[in-house]
Image (cartoon, rainbow, N blue to C red):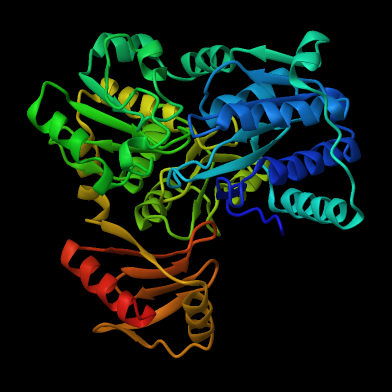
Length: 469
Protein backbone atom coordinates (compact mmCIF):
# COMPACT_ATOMS: atom_id res chain seq x y z
CA UNK A 1 0.00 0.00 0.00
CA UNK A 2 1.00 3.63 -0.45
CA UNK A 3 1.92 5.36 2.82
CA UNK A 4 0.77 8.98 2.84
CA UNK A 5 1.39 11.50 5.60
CA UNK A 6 -1.52 13.90 6.16
CA UNK A 7 -1.74 17.15 8.09
CA UNK A 8 0.12 15.53 11.00
CA UNK A 9 1.53 12.07 10.40
CA UNK A 10 0.27 8.82 8.94
CA UNK A 11 -3.02 7.43 10.24
CA UNK A 12 -5.17 4.46 9.39
CA UNK A 13 -7.80 2.06 10.65
CA UNK A 14 -6.29 -0.52 12.99
CA UNK A 15 -5.93 -4.01 11.46
CA UNK A 16 -6.92 -2.67 8.03
CA UNK A 17 -4.36 0.00 7.19
CA UNK A 18 -2.55 0.53 10.47
CA UNK A 19 -1.06 -2.95 10.88
CA UNK A 20 2.21 -4.15 12.42
CA UNK A 21 3.51 -4.94 8.93
CA UNK A 22 2.74 -1.48 7.56
CA UNK A 23 4.04 0.17 10.73
CA UNK A 24 7.28 -1.78 10.30
CA UNK A 25 7.64 -0.37 6.78
CA UNK A 26 7.15 3.17 8.08
CA UNK A 27 9.54 2.58 10.97
CA UNK A 28 12.23 1.16 8.66
CA UNK A 29 11.89 4.14 6.35
CA UNK A 30 12.21 6.45 9.36
CA UNK A 31 15.42 4.77 10.51
CA UNK A 32 16.84 4.94 6.99
CA UNK A 33 15.95 8.63 6.88
CA UNK A 34 17.72 9.29 10.21
CA UNK A 35 20.84 7.52 8.93
CA UNK A 36 20.74 9.46 5.66
CA UNK A 37 20.51 12.78 7.53
CA UNK A 38 23.30 11.92 9.96
CA UNK A 39 20.90 11.91 12.92
CA UNK A 40 20.93 8.22 13.82
CA UNK A 41 23.70 8.52 16.40
CA UNK A 42 21.63 11.04 18.37
CA UNK A 43 18.97 8.43 19.08
CA UNK A 44 15.19 8.39 18.93
CA UNK A 45 12.45 9.22 21.47
CA UNK A 46 9.29 7.10 21.26
CA UNK A 47 5.98 7.75 22.99
CA UNK A 48 2.40 6.52 22.73
CA UNK A 49 -1.14 7.38 23.74
CA UNK A 50 -3.93 5.25 25.24
CA UNK A 51 -5.37 3.87 22.01
CA UNK A 52 -5.82 0.19 21.33
CA UNK A 53 -2.39 -1.49 20.92
CA UNK A 54 -0.50 1.82 21.11
CA UNK A 55 2.10 0.50 23.56
CA UNK A 56 2.76 -2.57 21.42
CA UNK A 57 3.01 -0.42 18.29
CA UNK A 58 5.52 1.82 20.07
CA UNK A 59 7.55 -1.19 21.15
CA UNK A 60 7.58 -2.39 17.54
CA UNK A 61 9.06 0.94 16.42
CA UNK A 62 11.70 0.59 19.15
CA UNK A 63 12.58 -2.91 17.90
CA UNK A 64 13.14 -1.56 14.39
CA UNK A 65 15.21 1.31 15.77
CA UNK A 66 17.41 -1.12 17.69
CA UNK A 67 17.77 -3.35 14.63
CA UNK A 68 19.08 -0.35 12.72
CA UNK A 69 21.64 0.56 15.36
CA UNK A 70 19.64 3.51 16.73
CA UNK A 71 19.27 3.83 20.50
CA UNK A 72 15.68 4.41 21.55
CA UNK A 73 14.26 6.11 24.64
CA UNK A 74 10.81 4.53 25.04
CA UNK A 75 8.19 6.11 27.29
CA UNK A 76 7.31 3.89 30.24
CA UNK A 77 3.64 4.90 30.11
CA UNK A 78 1.18 6.85 27.97
CA UNK A 79 2.27 10.44 27.43
CA UNK A 80 1.03 13.62 25.67
CA UNK A 81 2.46 14.36 22.24
CA UNK A 82 4.03 17.68 23.39
CA UNK A 83 5.90 15.78 26.11
CA UNK A 84 7.50 13.59 23.43
CA UNK A 85 8.37 16.67 21.37
CA UNK A 86 9.89 18.32 24.43
CA UNK A 87 11.89 15.18 25.22
CA UNK A 88 13.35 15.19 21.70
CA UNK A 89 14.60 18.74 22.08
CA UNK A 90 15.58 18.45 25.74
CA UNK A 91 17.65 15.30 25.20
CA UNK A 92 19.17 16.36 21.87
CA UNK A 93 17.71 13.32 20.09
CA UNK A 94 17.74 12.98 16.32
CA UNK A 95 13.96 12.75 16.25
CA UNK A 96 10.88 11.33 17.87
CA UNK A 97 7.93 9.09 17.11
CA UNK A 98 4.52 9.37 18.75
CA UNK A 99 2.02 6.56 18.27
CA UNK A 100 -1.34 8.30 18.22
CA UNK A 101 -4.26 9.12 15.97
CA UNK A 102 -4.89 12.30 17.95
CA UNK A 103 -8.61 13.18 17.80
CA UNK A 104 -9.64 10.49 15.29
CA UNK A 105 -12.30 7.87 16.13
CA UNK A 106 -11.17 4.90 18.26
CA UNK A 107 -10.71 2.50 15.33
CA UNK A 108 -7.77 4.61 14.13
CA UNK A 109 -4.16 4.74 15.18
CA UNK A 110 -1.26 6.73 13.79
CA UNK A 111 2.42 7.60 13.56
CA UNK A 112 3.61 11.18 14.16
CA UNK A 113 7.21 12.02 13.36
CA UNK A 114 8.91 14.73 15.43
CA UNK A 115 12.05 16.45 14.19
CA UNK A 116 15.13 17.25 16.27
CA UNK A 117 13.90 20.78 17.07
CA UNK A 118 10.92 19.34 18.97
CA UNK A 119 8.13 19.94 16.49
CA UNK A 120 6.11 18.16 13.80
CA UNK A 121 7.80 16.89 10.67
CA UNK A 122 7.85 19.58 7.99
CA UNK A 123 6.30 18.93 4.55
CA UNK A 124 9.74 18.51 2.95
CA UNK A 125 10.61 15.89 5.58
CA UNK A 126 7.43 13.87 5.14
CA UNK A 127 7.84 13.95 1.35
CA UNK A 128 11.37 12.59 1.68
CA UNK A 129 10.17 9.93 4.11
CA UNK A 130 7.32 8.87 1.82
CA UNK A 131 9.80 8.48 -1.05
CA UNK A 132 12.14 6.45 1.13
CA UNK A 133 9.32 4.12 2.21
CA UNK A 134 8.16 3.71 -1.41
CA UNK A 135 11.73 2.92 -2.48
CA UNK A 136 12.08 0.31 0.24
CA UNK A 137 8.82 -1.35 -0.79
CA UNK A 138 9.79 -1.34 -4.48
CA UNK A 139 13.22 -2.79 -3.79
CA UNK A 140 11.95 -5.41 -1.38
CA UNK A 141 14.14 -4.12 1.43
CA UNK A 142 13.67 -6.14 4.56
CA UNK A 143 12.98 -4.90 8.07
CA UNK A 144 16.00 -4.72 10.37
CA UNK A 145 14.86 -5.49 13.91
CA UNK A 146 15.99 -6.69 17.31
CA UNK A 147 13.64 -8.43 19.71
CA UNK A 148 12.49 -6.12 22.50
CA UNK A 149 13.88 -8.02 25.51
CA UNK A 150 17.30 -8.37 23.89
CA UNK A 151 17.47 -4.68 23.00
CA UNK A 152 16.39 -3.66 26.51
CA UNK A 153 18.97 -6.01 28.00
CA UNK A 154 21.87 -4.60 26.01
CA UNK A 155 20.78 -0.97 26.41
CA UNK A 156 19.68 -0.16 22.88
CA UNK A 157 16.15 0.44 24.22
CA UNK A 158 15.76 2.34 27.50
CA UNK A 159 12.45 3.07 29.22
CA UNK A 160 12.07 6.56 30.71
CA UNK A 161 9.52 8.88 32.31
CA UNK A 162 8.65 11.21 29.42
CA UNK A 163 6.48 13.40 31.62
CA UNK A 164 9.01 14.44 34.25
CA UNK A 165 11.14 16.85 32.21
CA UNK A 166 8.07 18.15 30.39
CA UNK A 167 6.33 19.09 33.65
CA UNK A 168 9.45 20.94 34.79
CA UNK A 169 9.40 22.93 31.55
CA UNK A 170 5.73 23.87 32.03
CA UNK A 171 6.48 24.99 35.58
CA UNK A 172 9.22 27.25 34.23
CA UNK A 173 6.98 28.76 31.56
CA UNK A 174 3.96 29.78 33.65
CA UNK A 175 3.63 31.27 37.10
CA UNK A 176 2.37 28.21 38.96
CA UNK A 177 2.60 29.95 42.34
CA UNK A 178 0.23 32.68 41.11
CA UNK A 179 -2.19 30.12 39.65
CA UNK A 180 -2.17 28.03 42.82
CA UNK A 181 -2.66 31.09 45.00
CA UNK A 182 -5.69 32.12 42.93
CA UNK A 183 -7.27 28.73 43.78
CA UNK A 184 -9.47 28.77 40.67
CA UNK A 185 -11.96 25.88 40.92
CA UNK A 186 -10.91 23.76 37.91
CA UNK A 187 -12.23 20.61 36.28
CA UNK A 188 -10.42 18.88 33.42
CA UNK A 189 -11.70 16.43 30.80
CA UNK A 190 -8.78 14.58 29.14
CA UNK A 191 -11.36 12.51 27.20
CA UNK A 192 -9.74 9.23 28.35
CA UNK A 193 -6.59 10.33 26.56
CA UNK A 194 -2.88 10.71 27.18
CA UNK A 195 -3.28 14.01 29.06
CA UNK A 196 -4.94 12.27 31.99
CA UNK A 197 -3.41 13.23 35.33
CA UNK A 198 -1.08 15.96 34.08
CA UNK A 199 -3.03 18.97 35.39
CA UNK A 200 -3.46 17.20 38.72
CA UNK A 201 0.31 16.76 38.98
CA UNK A 202 0.81 20.51 38.49
CA UNK A 203 -2.29 21.77 40.31
CA UNK A 204 -3.22 19.40 43.14
CA UNK A 205 -6.89 19.66 43.99
CA UNK A 206 -8.11 20.11 40.43
CA UNK A 207 -10.91 17.71 39.49
CA UNK A 208 -10.92 15.39 36.49
CA UNK A 209 -13.51 13.38 34.58
CA UNK A 210 -12.98 10.64 31.99
CA UNK A 211 -9.51 10.05 33.41
CA UNK A 212 -9.55 6.27 33.23
CA UNK A 213 -8.03 4.37 30.32
CA UNK A 214 -10.66 3.45 27.73
CA UNK A 215 -9.49 2.70 24.16
CA UNK A 216 -13.10 3.16 23.00
CA UNK A 217 -13.10 6.67 24.55
CA UNK A 218 -16.55 6.10 26.00
CA UNK A 219 -18.00 5.94 22.49
CA UNK A 220 -17.04 9.56 21.71
CA UNK A 221 -14.06 10.47 19.49
CA UNK A 222 -11.50 12.25 21.71
CA UNK A 223 -11.96 15.60 20.03
CA UNK A 224 -12.90 18.50 22.35
CA UNK A 225 -15.70 19.98 20.26
CA UNK A 226 -18.91 21.48 21.61
CA UNK A 227 -21.02 18.38 20.94
CA UNK A 228 -18.55 16.20 22.86
CA UNK A 229 -18.30 18.36 25.98
CA UNK A 230 -21.89 18.55 27.22
CA UNK A 231 -21.02 16.78 30.48
CA UNK A 232 -18.15 19.17 31.18
CA UNK A 233 -20.43 22.14 30.48
CA UNK A 234 -23.08 20.77 32.85
CA UNK A 235 -20.57 20.24 35.64
CA UNK A 236 -19.27 23.80 35.39
CA UNK A 237 -22.78 25.25 35.05
CA UNK A 238 -24.17 23.35 38.01
CA UNK A 239 -21.18 22.84 40.26
CA UNK A 240 -18.48 24.68 42.14
CA UNK A 241 -16.14 25.01 39.14
CA UNK A 242 -15.20 28.31 37.53
CA UNK A 243 -13.57 26.86 34.44
CA UNK A 244 -13.35 23.58 32.53
CA UNK A 245 -10.48 22.52 30.28
CA UNK A 246 -10.66 19.72 27.72
CA UNK A 247 -7.86 17.95 25.83
CA UNK A 248 -7.90 15.76 22.76
CA UNK A 249 -6.62 12.18 22.70
CA UNK A 250 -2.91 13.06 22.70
CA UNK A 251 -3.29 16.38 24.58
CA UNK A 252 -1.84 18.66 21.92
CA UNK A 253 -5.20 20.41 21.40
CA UNK A 254 -7.46 22.25 23.81
CA UNK A 255 -10.98 23.60 24.25
CA UNK A 256 -12.57 25.09 27.36
CA UNK A 257 -15.78 25.83 29.25
CA UNK A 258 -16.25 29.33 30.63
CA UNK A 259 -17.58 30.51 34.01
CA UNK A 260 -21.16 30.34 32.69
CA UNK A 261 -20.84 26.71 31.70
CA UNK A 262 -20.75 27.57 28.00
CA UNK A 263 -18.39 26.09 25.43
CA UNK A 264 -15.30 28.27 24.91
CA UNK A 265 -13.87 27.48 21.52
CA UNK A 266 -10.21 27.26 20.45
CA UNK A 267 -10.81 30.41 18.39
CA UNK A 268 -11.68 32.28 21.57
CA UNK A 269 -8.72 30.71 23.38
CA UNK A 270 -6.35 31.91 20.63
CA UNK A 271 -7.54 35.50 21.05
CA UNK A 272 -7.44 35.46 24.87
CA UNK A 273 -3.94 33.96 25.05
CA UNK A 274 -2.58 36.27 22.34
CA UNK A 275 -3.76 39.29 24.31
CA UNK A 276 -2.40 37.81 27.54
CA UNK A 277 1.06 37.22 26.07
CA UNK A 278 1.26 40.67 24.48
CA UNK A 279 -0.37 42.91 27.07
CA UNK A 280 0.29 41.21 30.41
CA UNK A 281 3.51 39.33 29.78
CA UNK A 282 4.97 41.94 27.43
CA UNK A 283 5.99 39.43 24.78
CA UNK A 284 6.50 40.40 21.14
CA UNK A 285 6.76 38.70 17.77
CA UNK A 286 4.75 37.76 14.72
CA UNK A 287 1.60 35.64 14.70
CA UNK A 288 0.92 32.63 12.48
CA UNK A 289 -2.56 31.24 11.87
CA UNK A 290 -4.10 28.70 9.53
CA UNK A 291 -6.65 29.70 6.90
CA UNK A 292 -9.58 28.42 8.98
CA UNK A 293 -8.74 30.50 12.05
CA UNK A 294 -10.73 33.43 13.44
CA UNK A 295 -10.48 36.97 12.11
CA UNK A 296 -10.14 38.13 15.74
CA UNK A 297 -6.45 37.26 15.41
CA UNK A 298 -6.11 39.53 12.37
CA UNK A 299 -7.69 42.46 14.19
CA UNK A 300 -5.59 41.99 17.32
CA UNK A 301 -2.44 41.92 15.19
CA UNK A 302 -3.57 45.19 13.59
CA UNK A 303 -4.05 46.79 17.01
CA UNK A 304 -0.69 45.58 18.33
CA UNK A 305 1.30 46.15 15.14
CA UNK A 306 2.26 42.49 14.91
CA UNK A 307 3.12 40.83 11.60
CA UNK A 308 0.52 38.22 10.62
CA UNK A 309 1.24 35.08 8.60
CA UNK A 310 -1.46 32.78 7.16
CA UNK A 311 -0.81 29.13 6.31
CA UNK A 312 -2.61 26.04 5.00
CA UNK A 313 -4.25 23.85 7.66
CA UNK A 314 -1.83 21.72 9.65
CA UNK A 315 0.45 22.84 12.46
CA UNK A 316 3.50 21.70 10.48
CA UNK A 317 3.09 24.87 8.39
CA UNK A 318 2.93 27.00 11.52
CA UNK A 319 5.98 25.15 12.84
CA UNK A 320 7.99 26.11 9.76
CA UNK A 321 7.21 29.76 10.36
CA UNK A 322 8.18 29.45 14.02
CA UNK A 323 11.55 28.10 12.91
CA UNK A 324 12.11 30.81 10.29
CA UNK A 325 10.69 33.89 12.04
CA UNK A 326 10.29 35.40 15.48
CA UNK A 327 6.77 34.10 16.10
CA UNK A 328 5.02 35.01 19.35
CA UNK A 329 2.11 32.61 18.84
CA UNK A 330 0.84 30.28 16.16
CA UNK A 331 -2.18 28.08 15.86
CA UNK A 332 -5.13 26.56 14.11
CA UNK A 333 -8.89 26.55 14.67
CA UNK A 334 -9.04 22.99 15.98
CA UNK A 335 -7.24 23.92 19.19
CA UNK A 336 -3.61 23.33 18.24
CA UNK A 337 -1.71 26.33 19.60
CA UNK A 338 1.99 26.97 20.22
CA UNK A 339 3.93 29.85 21.77
CA UNK A 340 7.34 31.48 21.73
CA UNK A 341 9.91 30.28 24.26
CA UNK A 342 8.67 26.68 24.37
CA UNK A 343 8.83 24.32 21.38
CA UNK A 344 7.42 24.83 17.86
CA UNK A 345 4.59 22.45 18.70
CA UNK A 346 0.93 22.36 19.69
CA UNK A 347 0.55 22.00 23.43
CA UNK A 348 -2.93 21.75 24.93
CA UNK A 349 -1.72 21.50 28.52
CA UNK A 350 0.46 24.62 28.31
CA UNK A 351 -2.40 26.56 26.69
CA UNK A 352 -4.67 25.55 29.57
CA UNK A 353 -2.11 26.82 32.06
CA UNK A 354 -1.83 30.13 30.20
CA UNK A 355 -5.61 30.55 30.38
CA UNK A 356 -5.46 29.95 34.12
CA UNK A 357 -2.58 32.42 34.42
CA UNK A 358 -4.64 35.08 32.60
CA UNK A 359 -7.55 34.42 34.95
CA UNK A 360 -5.27 34.57 38.00
CA UNK A 361 -3.68 37.85 36.91
CA UNK A 362 -6.99 39.60 36.19
CA UNK A 363 -9.44 37.94 38.52
CA UNK A 364 -11.74 37.51 35.50
CA UNK A 365 -13.35 34.42 33.98
CA UNK A 366 -12.77 33.39 30.38
CA UNK A 367 -15.98 34.96 29.08
CA UNK A 368 -15.18 38.31 30.67
CA UNK A 369 -11.68 38.19 29.18
CA UNK A 370 -13.17 37.54 25.74
CA UNK A 371 -15.82 40.23 26.15
CA UNK A 372 -13.07 42.74 26.89
CA UNK A 373 -11.56 41.90 23.50
CA UNK A 374 -14.87 42.01 21.63
CA UNK A 375 -15.70 45.39 23.18
CA UNK A 376 -12.73 46.69 21.23
CA UNK A 377 -12.83 44.76 17.94
CA UNK A 378 -16.45 43.66 17.52
CA UNK A 379 -18.46 40.47 17.97
CA UNK A 380 -17.50 37.22 16.29
CA UNK A 381 -19.30 33.89 16.15
CA UNK A 382 -17.85 30.75 14.63
CA UNK A 383 -18.86 27.17 13.89
CA UNK A 384 -17.47 24.18 12.04
CA UNK A 385 -19.45 21.16 10.90
CA UNK A 386 -18.06 17.85 9.67
CA UNK A 387 -20.01 15.88 7.08
CA UNK A 388 -19.28 12.39 5.73
CA UNK A 389 -18.37 12.36 2.05
CA UNK A 390 -17.35 9.57 -0.31
CA UNK A 391 -14.12 9.71 -2.26
CA UNK A 392 -16.03 10.08 -5.53
CA UNK A 393 -18.22 12.91 -4.21
CA UNK A 394 -15.13 14.58 -2.76
CA UNK A 395 -13.35 14.58 -6.11
CA UNK A 396 -16.44 15.89 -7.93
CA UNK A 397 -16.79 18.74 -5.45
CA UNK A 398 -13.14 19.74 -5.76
CA UNK A 399 -13.36 19.84 -9.55
CA UNK A 400 -16.61 21.84 -9.37
CA UNK A 401 -15.13 24.46 -7.02
CA UNK A 402 -11.85 24.66 -8.91
CA UNK A 403 -13.84 25.60 -11.99
CA UNK A 404 -14.99 28.73 -10.12
CA UNK A 405 -18.22 30.55 -10.65
CA UNK A 406 -19.29 30.82 -6.98
CA UNK A 407 -20.35 34.47 -7.07
CA UNK A 408 -22.89 34.22 -4.28
CA UNK A 409 -23.18 32.14 -1.13
CA UNK A 410 -26.75 32.21 0.08
CA UNK A 411 -27.83 35.84 -0.07
CA UNK A 412 -24.27 37.18 0.15
CA UNK A 413 -22.02 38.25 -2.71
CA UNK A 414 -18.47 36.92 -2.59
CA UNK A 415 -15.97 39.80 -2.29
CA UNK A 416 -12.88 37.61 -2.70
CA UNK A 417 -11.69 34.02 -2.57
CA UNK A 418 -8.82 32.45 -0.66
CA UNK A 419 -7.63 29.14 -2.16
CA UNK A 420 -4.68 28.61 0.16
CA UNK A 421 -6.24 25.42 1.53
CA UNK A 422 -9.74 24.53 0.42
CA UNK A 423 -12.19 27.11 -0.89
CA UNK A 424 -12.72 30.14 1.32
CA UNK A 425 -15.34 32.73 0.34
CA UNK A 426 -14.98 36.11 2.05
CA UNK A 427 -17.73 38.76 2.11
CA UNK A 428 -17.61 42.54 2.35
CA UNK A 429 -18.43 42.63 6.07
CA UNK A 430 -15.55 40.27 6.89
CA UNK A 431 -17.72 37.17 7.38
CA UNK A 432 -16.58 34.04 5.55
CA UNK A 433 -17.25 30.42 4.63
CA UNK A 434 -14.57 27.77 4.07
CA UNK A 435 -15.32 24.51 2.24
CA UNK A 436 -12.53 21.99 2.77
CA UNK A 437 -12.23 18.20 2.49
CA UNK A 438 -10.25 16.68 5.39
CA UNK A 439 -6.72 15.52 4.74
CA UNK A 440 -6.97 12.57 7.16
CA UNK A 441 -10.61 11.36 7.13
CA UNK A 442 -13.50 10.81 4.64
CA UNK A 443 -15.02 14.04 5.88
CA UNK A 444 -15.99 17.39 4.39
CA UNK A 445 -15.45 20.30 6.77
CA UNK A 446 -17.45 23.51 6.53
CA UNK A 447 -16.27 26.51 8.57
CA UNK A 448 -17.96 29.87 9.01
CA UNK A 449 -17.44 33.06 10.99
CA UNK A 450 -19.75 36.10 11.13
CA UNK A 451 -21.10 38.81 13.40
CA UNK A 452 -24.04 36.71 14.63
CA UNK A 453 -24.90 33.01 15.13
CA UNK A 454 -27.79 33.41 12.67
CA UNK A 455 -25.48 34.49 9.85
CA UNK A 456 -23.08 31.65 10.66
CA UNK A 457 -25.91 29.13 10.30
CA UNK A 458 -27.09 30.76 7.08
CA UNK A 459 -23.60 30.44 5.57
CA UNK A 460 -23.25 26.83 6.70
CA UNK A 461 -26.59 25.93 5.12
CA UNK A 462 -25.44 27.58 1.91
CA UNK A 463 -22.21 25.62 2.11
CA UNK A 464 -24.13 22.37 2.32
CA UNK A 465 -26.11 23.36 -0.74
CA UNK A 466 -22.91 24.12 -2.67
CA UNK A 467 -21.41 20.77 -1.62
CA UNK A 468 -24.61 18.83 -2.23
CA UNK A 469 -24.50 17.16 1.20
